[in-house]
Structures are given as structure tokens and as C-alpha cells.
Length: 371
Image (cartoon, rainbow, N blue to C red):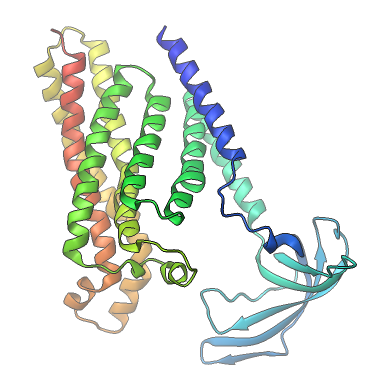
């Protein structure tokens, strides 16, 4: 019976995932592809004579000879251009043999190619290959559970892309939307991986409590820290795009959404441990299982809080290096917007772990304990 429930739930999630793939976001812009083609191309040769280096910055136009590798112009060779504006975070310099994303501008009347521009390196093939390796490795190790984990991964990504972001852009409450989508994805991920059973329900209860607590702390700490929402990349671009957005609430929601993955991990691990203890020692009482759950939760919390530090530290490594290179006092570093935002992410996520782990142990003990 339980096995049938798990299969039925997996099929249901699969159907919903297919629907999410099909439905549009509502923010598609056909004009961007009306007279433009985005194709894979290979750089045959380059002419760097018009590039000029000023200190560490390079500006100018790089002339390219490219061969189109996809689409209706596949196999044809064109002259293209790569403009460098002196912005090292977006500029790129191509070499012969590189694969690039080419933008072909077409004539409206004849459909012939007017101009060709190299927009960026073509990374789709590498991304797809890496994703396939990940899926195969996960399925090879975890079997059917690994397949369900892949399904939960795809479902979560589609929920963010097809539900969360469009609802943000439509002006819905970021906090309400964020916590509802987080609850939805957490439910699907936990029940797919743990199963539709007491183990899954135990992990869900602990995770929901942790997410709710993390969201509350995010709101309080967000007001306390007074961090501007524009600390996030591309936030200023959204301001000038014409959308009426509450960027502060979007930033706060991103804090507890970022922490929800670690909460799901911890709650699932503790629920699985209690389930295994119960299978081996079914005579244990609720009190004994709760005590065992607490003992399991303590080292898990200790390691996962440091894991969060590792996870977030990569995003501000260059900022720390820049501050250190300037000899900036540590108090200035700690109070900068960017570092404070990452500190908020880490601390809020850790506080959520501190609450959700023992609550999962408590719920598990009550569910599995011998009456």
C-alpha cells in the first residue's frame, strides 16, 4: 500500500513537472527573436589590431571570422564583431577555435543576414554534458531514489522559473509567494526522497517549522540590519526596467529560500535516522527515540552550520580579498552592505537549523515511539 502511494505521488509530480515545462512564464518577448537568430558558432580567426589596453582594461573592437554551427545558416562563414567596453565582468576576448554564441541580425524583407555579433562563449554543450554526468552518477549510486531526486531537482527549478519569478515580477507579495513556493518545493522534495510515510511526514513537520521560523527571523533581521536591496546583482537593472517591485521584501525572501535547502537536508537526515532506529529497535518508547534524535541532531547542526558558511563564503571571497588588499579595518568590512548581507544569510540559515533539527527529532519520537 505504501509502495503504491509512493509510485502514485511520483507520477503526480512527474505530470505537474511536464505541465510546468509547457506553460509560459508570461514574460516571453517574441520581439527579441523576431529578426534575430541565436546560434552556435566557431571562431575561425581573429583580428585584434583595434583592441587597446589601458592599464588592466581592454577596449575596442575585435574582428572575427566565424562559422555558424547550428540553424538554417549552419556551415556558412561570416565576418563578425566583438565589442569590448572596458568592463571586465562582461567583456570577453575570443581566440581561434573557441565556440561562441552568435547573434545574427536578419533583414525583415529578404531574411538575409545583415550583421553578426559574438555575444558570449557558447557553454550550452558543456552545461548539458555536466548535467547528464550528474544525473547518471546520481542514478547509478541511488537507483530509483536517485531518479526521484533528479525529478525533485527539475521540479524545484521549474517552480522557481515558472512560478516564483513571474509572481515576483507581477507584483505579488514576495514574502507570501516565497514561503508558499518554499513549502511546496519542500513537500515535493521530502516526500519524493523519503516517501509518503511517517519518515516523510516527520521530515516535513520539522522542515516546515524551520522554514517558518527562518522566514520570521529574516524579516526581523532584515529590518535590523538595514541592508539595501540593491546589494544584489542586477537589482538596479530591475529598478530601471519599469516593474513596480518591492526589492526589500524580495531580498528578505531570498534569505529564507536560500536556507531552505539546508533545512530539508537536516530534517530528512534526522527523520531517516529515527526511522532506521525504529526498524532495528521497535520496542523503544517515544522518550527514548526523542533522546536519540537529539543526540543525532547535535553533530548534524554543528556540521551543517559550518557547511552554510562554506556555501556562502565563495560568493564574497573576492570582496574580502579586495578589502584586505586595501588594508581596510575589519570593522569597516563587517559593516559593508555586501558582507552584512552574506552574514545575514549565514546566521539566519544557522538559526533555522538550530530549531528545525530538534523539532524533527521531537516529531519523529512521537510518531515512531511505542505507545
